[in-house]
Image (tube, rainbow, N blue to C red; front, side, top):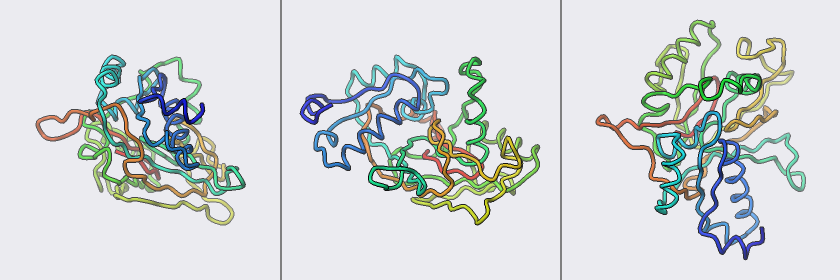
Length: 263
């Protein structure tokens, strides 16, 4: 689409899963980087039609397609942070690092392995995914310029299962178990150790030298990455999740096992 044609629209809407919205975000940010003025004025919308619809839960606190469409029709406006993942070993334009973006999560280890081997379970539909009742980050904000680094040390399987159950019922809390750290950050880098590294029980194949990144539902097979928050990178047709009596958000975002996630 030429810049003149793009400039004639108020917004672009992705109808599909989280990966479709991620492609839309990445495309708009790439055009901005090339100096396209029309890309700075475009607002983005998302009507959920995927298997998990984490983006819709993040923006509206609900995966209801009608709710998303109403926010678009009303012309609601909300700034949204984006995470930028630059993979050093990727094949970007002109030999530069390959760049991807996320608005929900980027997870390495357990989250990457779940994504890699869950494709065969798509026939289960939304039932194969769970949603935290209070949101993954109950007090998170959609445009505060922060993400949360969640580090889960090597533990036995039953300890990790306990962490996942707490995540579903209470959201992320630092030191919710002795093996979990939740650290607010604005940027991070993960570099592989010489000769590879072991993430043990997090891998489907325990003998494999590395895992993969799950970037909003898309796999990235590169361990050497830099991740940073781009505050208010895009504007979306949304108002944000409603808050309950305790101020907890109805929807949230995050991840586990060595991961960085937006709220």
